[in-house]
Amino acid sequence: MGFVVPERRERERLLLSRGDVDSSVWAHNPPLQETLMFQVPPQWRAEELIADLHRRGAPDVAVGIIGQLAGQAVPLAEAVDRVFHAFYGDLISLVPGRLAYYDGEWKNANYVLSR
Image 1 (cartoon, rainbow, N blue to C red):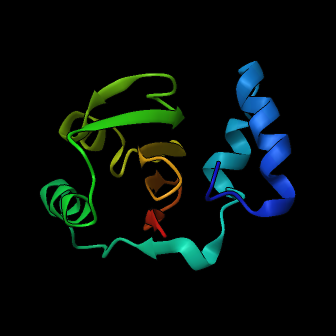
Image 2: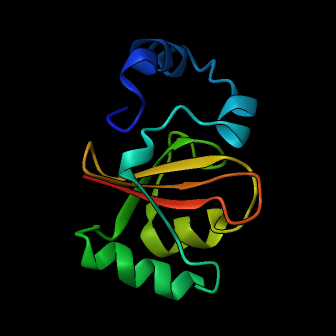
């Protein structure tokens, strides 16, 4: 929850711990800190995103936080294949509090979250 705006962190942490995340909010208007969001260029393919994530220090395993992969640890390539341009509102963690990926429900809502 390190990328969530401070005023929503406790609430989102509580909802997540109860398995009660509001997927509509995460798909349309995620409570993420905009200053930590880097939009993925619209012309990128999954391979380019994976290469960028590796350059930023991503391991070969991703953990689903919200969305299709919630609660699962899967290989990074599989995670990106499942969520990249899937339009569900997915958040995957790569390095807790330092690197994550968010894929929203609307067009071009693909962001690397990094500090």
